[in-house]
Amino acid sequence: MRQLHFSPEDLEAIRRERYQHPHPRVQQKMEVLWLKSRGLTHEDIARLAGVSRRSVQRYLDDFAQGGLDRIRRLPWRGQPAALAAHQASLEDHFLGNPARSAREAQADIERLTGVRRGLTQVRAFLKKLSACAGARSAPSRPRPTPTSRPAS
Image 1 (tube, rainbow, N blue to C red):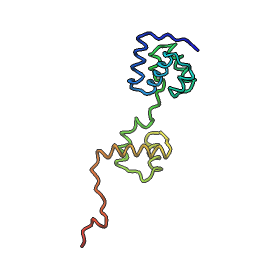
Image 2: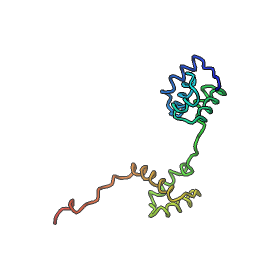
Image 3: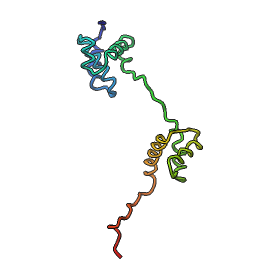
Image 4: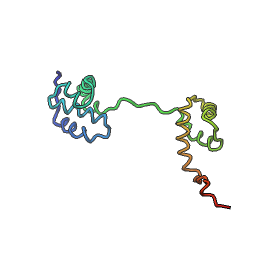
């Protein structure tokens, strides 16, 4: 079992951020460090923190290499959506020329942007667009039902 040195300032930051850091993954890492500072074994830390033993080792390696700054770092960034840059122009196009089907919208999107997406992605994109467009369009009226029509 490795020995790590925790300064009083580090312990205070770990104690505070294991509950108050805005990101839950960092809170989990701080919990692992807190349990390690209390002298628990890696097996016990993994069980109490709800992570694998390998994660415990990885978090401790990160702390040993870069301190708390390395623990607070979130390494993933994700990728921006390819259609996000074209959202305004596509919204204007579909407001003026509504697609009759997802397949037609898929063809329009590919023709206008050069980005090919599957039908499921096109449907999700159109749903997001319709939520945006609905805020700018006139409110829709409820359809009349047989009981709401006036009797002649």
